[in-house]
Length: 260
Image (tube, rainbow, N blue to C red; front, side):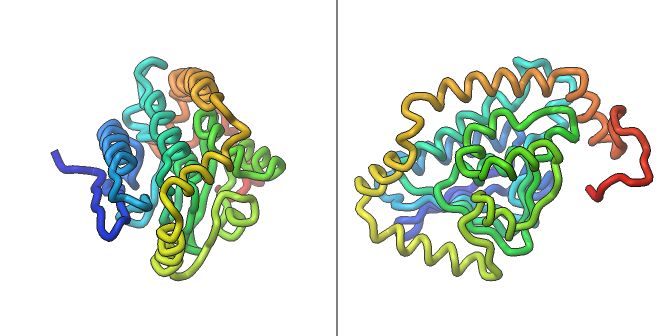
């Protein structure tokens, strides 16, 4: 089986690379398992002073693999494993930098939000597209909502509208949107390597201190909610429509439909 997530540690930097470009680095079962394994290994490695999460292909991460979600019960939905990924990123004592050369959607945006620093190409786009396929951004809300300003969060969660990297910076999802992503990530990595490992871990804990002990409970509640939507009638119709490249049943024709 071809590996979908690669790990390479050089000069104190553990680079984890999503490498499933054929399905836009969607969160398939295999990719989820490998990402968890590589994250755990990087966090446990004393030689890794910084973790960089990046990708091959034109898309950072398209969210859940909807082919696997079709026909699955709430208990079988792949979204059940996403909290483990997000919580590991959020609580990792080693700083994590997201490096995006391309767009992120849905669960992929949740991963970006869970990282400590996020740098994207100024051409990258983002969307909370869940409502358009009959589900909600429940699980990722645990990491996304602490980052985003309330008004834009409500707007973007409800509309599913695509927004650009400049707005992602403006509302708090990204730290930087730049033309030269590699150079900007290298700059952040160099600064992070100047910090003492214990102090970096303590500083990160300090930033998140407003949520002591609550994240696991939040994820448990949101996971059950999300899985129910994925397995529900609207979610399954939306997933079928997505796979069949048609509008779901609840969308009625209109001459004034907004751009997707």
